[in-house]
Length: 379
Ligand SMILES: [Zn+2]
Ligand SMILES: [Zn+2]
Image 1 (tube, rainbow, N blue to C red):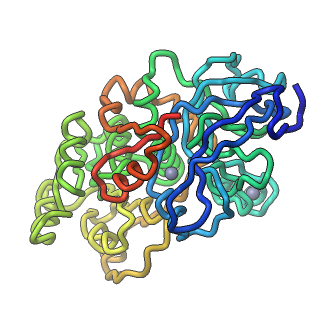
Image 2 (cartoon, rainbow, N blue to C red; image 1 turned 90 degrees about the horizontal axis):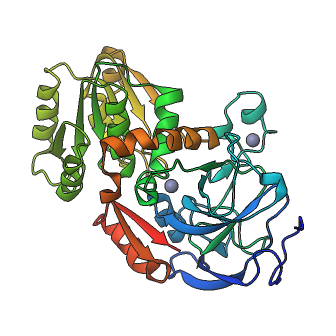
């Protein structure tokens, strides 16, 4: 096998693969056929069974983030090994890989050379992250560098991890991006401690992953505040969180917040986790934490603008306010390692709606409308 990608070549992967391509911001995505290269040196070609859609993809498609085009979208995925370079004989845990094995991969590769990587020991804050489905356009080789495609070419340096036997791949996709995002937040930034009362703001995939991991971590009680109502119901049906409060559809949000406080015994939660992406949620979240508690802010991944807070709430409550950004390969590996425990407790597959690649427009519209919990394209 050659170390070079071979556009249109017959060898190696060979043939062509369909891929969902962002060509112009704000325009419908296009279904292209791109050449399947041979496995690159130290890397592999993976047949993309599933490519998840997350809120970030909506922002990318609209041009809210600066990314190069044309671009095969999809930064979260699960597939089967199609062709391996001899330099990619094992996954990151040292487990031998074979053609046909189910794997997940980390979307980003940190550079290992910038100041955050080398000096601050914070690879999540790398200044030169290369991310599949985000900043690997089709005019760079190889074009197949996103998960919304029949094949993806994973280069040397990608964190690839085998999915444990017996884990339903659809269930694994439920929190493909949200899961490692919350593993990073809870492992590195502010853990859930045994016996704590936790309030989670937001009932999208990140909020549900936060609640589910809080439960696995030994929280005494998890209160989920979000909406719309069908999302809260979906969480309740599979046992995620103990209490479910609809603030999105409430006539009087203040009454909902009072109810949350009452559920914490009137003092507020030990830990409040923000997973809404809505700036106005921050002032509410500060008031839901107990004095001496913590506020972990995860959901403000895109800049949605300023908001008003009362800083006295931070000082008087003596809060630890902690931000958490993205994740690295290590957190994906931890998420995959948690999957057997997660799927044994929660029927995560029920959160997922799958769509064929050609129905990407419908899938994105459903995500934008919030009518599905987790949309996944099936390659
Ligand atoms: Zn770096
Ligand atoms: Zn994502």
